[in-house]
Image (cartoon, rainbow, N blue to C red; front, side):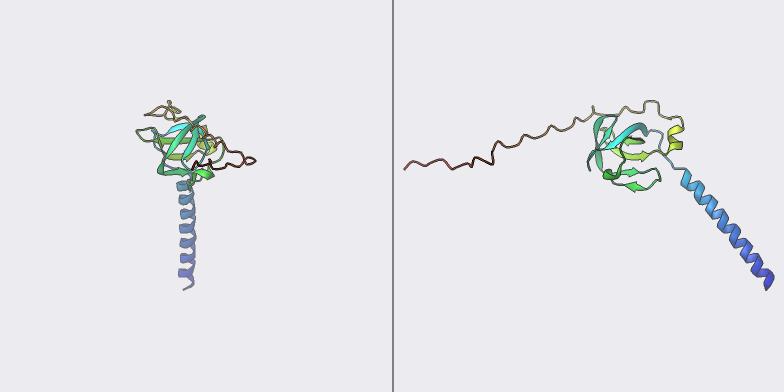
Length: 146
């Protein structure tokens, strides 16, 4: 009885150690597609990211992974980080992986990193002009002629 408990305790601790080591190995490696291009990004709003100083549209449902491989919203993207980006055929962003310092130090597998496929970069929308009304001068209706 005593011997079987000792065997069980030893086997359990070895199994737990193997699980921890295996889990940490899995957490360190992530599969970023080779066609994902490296670029410096920054947040803009919920529909756009700034990629290499150009505004680029995010597809609806685009996934952004932080450096811990967790999905985040566009508003949680840090300023000026290096990432790998996967585009669709129209040049819109499908997926983003924010790189860890170790991934940044590795050689880029895609040498044409910052160039997007498809359309030319999307220009920032021009600000809309404000209506020309003054709060100090009320507008009166035009007089009607009888």
